[in-house]
Length: 316
Image 1 (tube, rainbow, N blue to C red):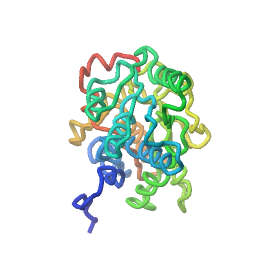
Image 2: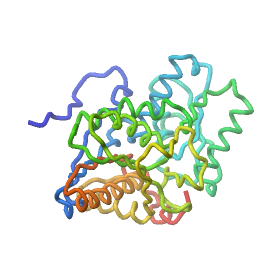
Image 3: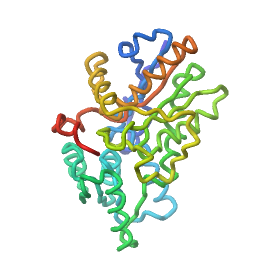
């Protein structure tokens, strides 16, 4: 019998809920490749609603442990939304002040959620995307370095470490030797880097893929087209077995498709992940006659909901 996913337990803090998210088998969007199982790890079941709870918690706790983050400092970082929500939740739970720099055109839902935790928002140019937020937060910290703890999610080794210790291990615990492929899209690149490193230590070969937006100007919020972006310090282009381009339309269309066919309402970065997973499943079906592909659902679709049609045409 398959063990039940248990959440009925007593907790000391909301942050104790981070991690141990379930895997869901997709039965309909990959029905045309019956020899391959496609699973998506439901990261929106983290308490902050996204996969970013994992690296945010690891970065904060590691910094508290070694003294870089103290009560007299304000946590500040750049974010397109999800990491900011995670920082805000963790800051509120632990009693630390948080300021965030984000592009002015991130979804209203993400602005509202972070503010609800008591976080102060600083907006960068909507035309410069996540790179503009990175440049602005660096300017702020440079002017008053003693005022802030700047985790710098794009360069902090605790980011991929969270996925090495958590996401990757949990995937192996759930599917073990069954898994043949793993794919995650690139933003900070922490998910792809950390999970891939853990899966590479498994006793059998697992083909690990990093997906990225196919175009420099895209509408897959939170994802990076590396050739045209500030490259994260934690990113190693030689680590994945393959870099797979995914278009904006593929990501958006798949997020709508899994909602209609699977009852799974996810964001567009998750749509891009699932689109990439289905492509790998099609290839495994044709070339290998079977397999098991695992990806992650980064967050739910509500954070992209307002106003959806306008945002699709915008450059993030």
